[in-house]
Image 1 (tube, rainbow, N blue to C red):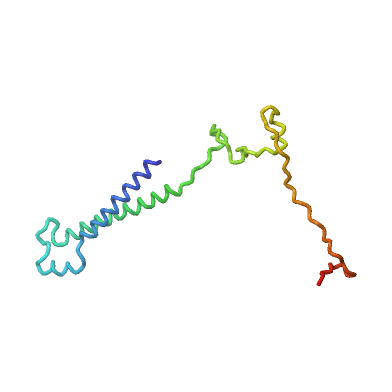
Image 2: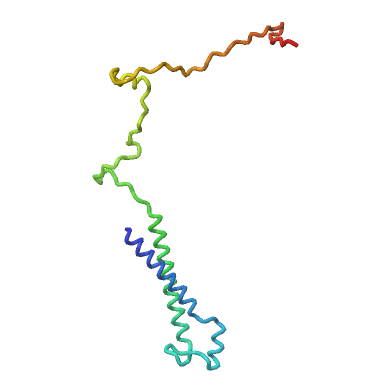
Length: 148
């Protein structure tokens, strides 16, 4: 499918450059008046208005190729990939089948370590220090008395 995307991209770029060139080659509407009085391309290969028809038809063809390649690239880009079914013989794991690694706890680490290879560790406490109780004397309402 990658070659198809490459082909569509090349077609799109070539058709875009060709449309730009063909539009720049065409004469504006004001040039038709000069050709009507004899100073035009009446002696050319395509005749008096043959080149205008040829260029406009060629522009329309390449514009159609450009739009079709754009639609094709959009279709290929938005195409969803399907997960193979149960009967396809594929052994791809589903999203829920992947094991999640679990960090070992300190009890597991102590159980799995051998005393010969592990150095003794100092006991560390992660508990918060105790908070001292309020020692200010209280009055009858239970509020602390602040000295003045």
